[in-house]
Image 1 (cartoon, rainbow, N blue to C red):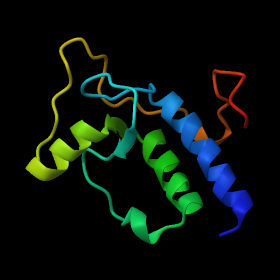
Image 2 (cartoon, helix red, strand yellow; image 1 turned 90 degrees about the vertical axis):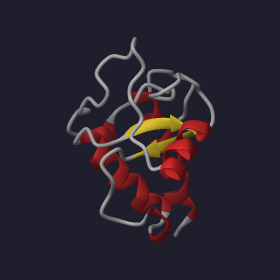
Image 3 (tube, rainbow, N blue to C red; image 1 turned 60 degrees about the vertical axis):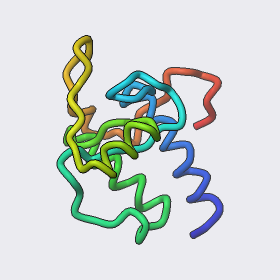
Image 4 (cartoon, rainbow, N blue to C red; image 1 turned 135 degrees about the horizontal axis):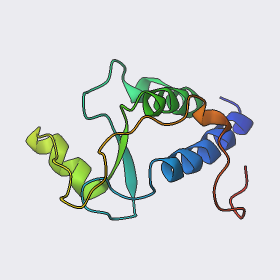
Length: 113
């Protein structure tokens, strides 16, 4: 994959994390964050380039099938094979994003896009 596509994928990840709330869905932690598919997924992310992976994540987010988890919550979910319940003060757990996530602009003007 070209260096340009890799940089673009990194920028798109920053934007998608911001659109998904920028914090862990379960505990509110802000770093490091992982994308989580609560209902599972039909592809292996490791078999995709970072550009292809981000396109899939954007599609999944637009369908309301993606959330952010911190490393601790993501590991706990993976090792225990459990579905994390939302915290009591959480808004709706999974809310579909705008149809075209890839064209969304970051809220912070200091984030290069």
